[in-house]
Image 1 (cartoon, rainbow, N blue to C red):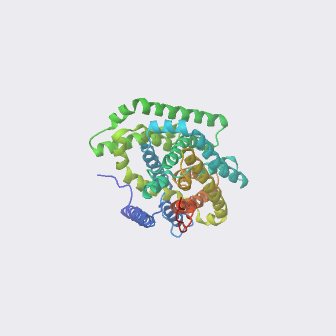
Image 2: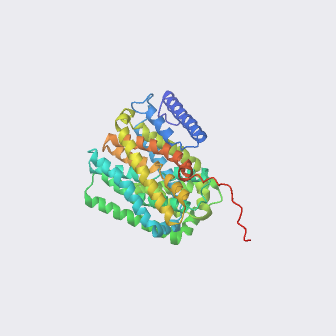
Image 3: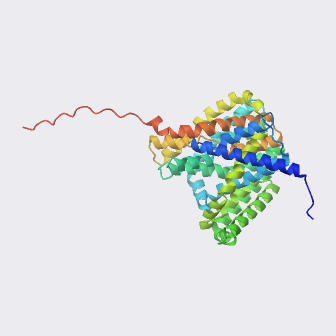
Length: 403
């Protein structure tokens, strides 16, 4: 006989709650699709409404929330890594490192200074700098597809910045993990060196032996391929977490190692899983934020949104100008980078889980809410903002006669 681990009433309650949550997420995704906006802010609002201090509080265990959020991060970063090849990453680092450094400075410093000014201390300030630094690759990619801009002249500049930021996160997240743990400088230095070594090894394997790795996982069966990739991803993510490199980084590197038709198939196969667990990830993060704290931090979030929205637009403008894009292209490149999303929540989630400061989660939630909505809206009107009305032509005088 199968041992009974819970009463039927408990199981029924959990299933009902989860079913209602998933249906609610489906409704929110449908609304966002109708509005042609990212569903991220709606997921966060739902989590605030259902979490501690919300309208209705879900009776979910902390372990369940943590595991669900962790799986969401892993799948989100795996899907992101599949979009890039090792060649693209190395080329981006070679050609666009100057713009990447400008982007890092203009995005990170405002959050760092704000954290220090608020008296949160150095650890929380470093995390807030990460929150304000990185654009949402998911939102930006969706905007480029929806607006038909993938073939535009400025798009390579946008993608270059996104790739640089995503790869930089492979180095930043382990540092954030050490910062949250409160380890000494020597431990932080060791963690960074380990991370650099791991990233270097994975990129080397992907460049030289990527075809062999892909061949080992390849299968004509979608089921076998999906299970193989997910199994490898979870194992690597777990090992990365043990090494304090971050599970998200491990999943991202697995995605990079895949190449050719296998990476394209994997992107399609994990798409529905990614969407499901990414939605639950944003929801679970917001469940841990007390909505009663939002009014007190709304001014800070709005100020950071204005400052970093402007600096991100400036970064995109500079990057597009370097490849010869016109004024409209520069504006489009800058505005598509404004939205924040997955990485901002991942970084804030580390701080919330580590108990550094409760205000960090509230500021991050409000900040992402503002920019995840404002970014796409501003992007849609980027052309109109820089387009100048053409002068109305007057009557054309007849040419003078030479006679």
